[in-house]
Image (cartoon, rainbow, N blue to C red):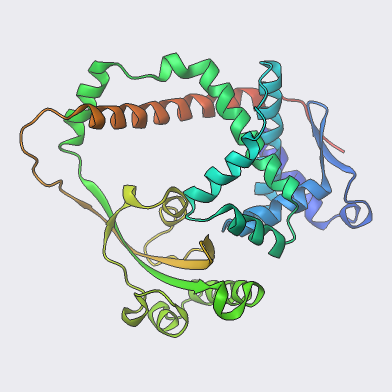
Length: 308
């Protein structure tokens, strides 16, 4: 059985077993002798639900925690240590990518009864893995000038992916955090089952788009904030996200359509150094992410994962 099959089988067992209720701090499984407790799993479930995850969140939590253990172990093997303050800075980066403040993130954690340590562990694993991947693959991932020329030529003729979305913005200030989160969960479920998004937006949304049923102007998918883009592009047209944390509240988004549009003709001119540097960073990020994913799969194949 592959490690993913093991993770799924374990998650199904853990979801219905009595051990979790008896002793949440007992090991649920070990990854190369590093324990993952039932409490760790329950906390990660709450965290990924707060981030809008759908589906079998129990299996997803176990999968993420298993990967995190392997990532941290790889960093320890390379004697990588994070400098003081790095984890807090990582939480700031996490918040900024989602249009939030650190205080917003901590408020959501408190509301969802998620330990700060759970968030710190999540961020630490990501930061340490970034260092692992950079140390192993940076030179290989850096594009050459010829790579940049070829990418610029291709980009000039590649259509732009444009999305049309609608929004419902629910500020905490109106109802308080608890009531707002409850309302957002209920709306998300109702809308996923076919309730009218425009009607809900006109009634509940406090965004400027409420009067037109939450409809936003079409926008290039690449221009969306990363956390929002990741959720929206997982949807089929007509799909609705779970509540997404935003500064001072939560939002629910609906993907109305996705289309490819030709790029506007640009004057014949060599791109400036800023444009080349931006493209260099984009290609580097894509490559090093791909190398990192491949390396993670190797580590997982070699890992000793034991259910307790």
